Length: 352
Image (cartoon, rainbow, N blue to C red; front, side, top):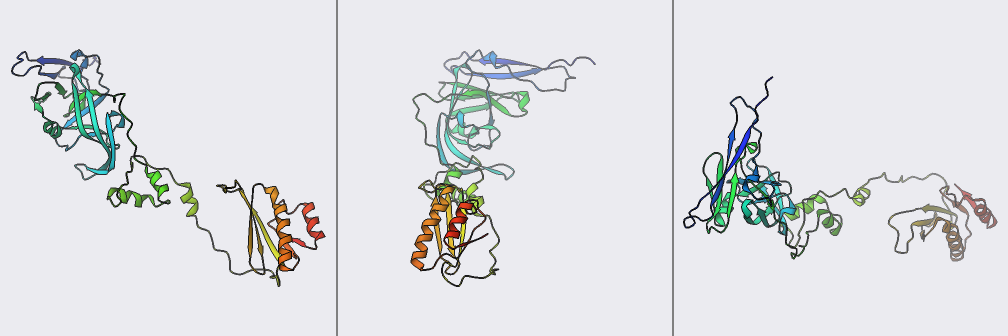
């Protein structure tokens, strides 16, 4: 098979010499040459022909005459930035996305030209960098489409001139190749808007959809929010919303006929988060006759026996009744031989 001749692109820089009429004006035209049999139209324009080594085409910005504002998806392209409440951006097919910030973008182009765009919207979900032709014209720029292969962007005062060309790999789009200027070192860091996760915690774990609804419809004043990041699942909400079966209303076995007749004990832990006193265990004692509950917070599991002894002495003295049957959940601390011997010496029985 014969080799396919490569598709070539030449860049021609045109500059006028009439300084009085339009000083310093220049334009760029990309001319494509190839054999008629070539079907692959992928090529690129060599921007080195502009003789400006300080700029590399690290980003491509599309000129759009239908866009009503400048749109940028990359937060780092902004030299100044301010977070705003979510603003709806609608597309031609009825789809919509949201802008989360606004600021200025400075683009460094060939021949030392700088394009300063004001009121650029930050749209994190955007897939293209769009430069609004209408906004450029409102700022005093002139956009001229000379042919199907070139267009020029100039400033009315003649102080600086810009270039835009349509390259073949972008189809029928006119692209402006350049690099964003970094913010100056003296610029102050802007205050970031709280995330959706932060507002979820601030409002007592309110439903995420309710917070988004309040922010998008402006139902709350003074609520800056960043909706560009999807919040993680809230572990506390998952645990809180778990459902369990109700305890049965019927009971098996005999009931106590007097105070301290039957006492139930349950040792739980460790639990998170810890209490203010750094205690993660709890001992719960319930008198079967009166249904009174007593809870003791413990630092360590080994403190359960000493806490029970203290409670037993106080309860027997206040009720005037000795402990009859001690029911446990088969925990190791209450089934030890030493503890069972202690209850037997006091005349109490252990029931599991």
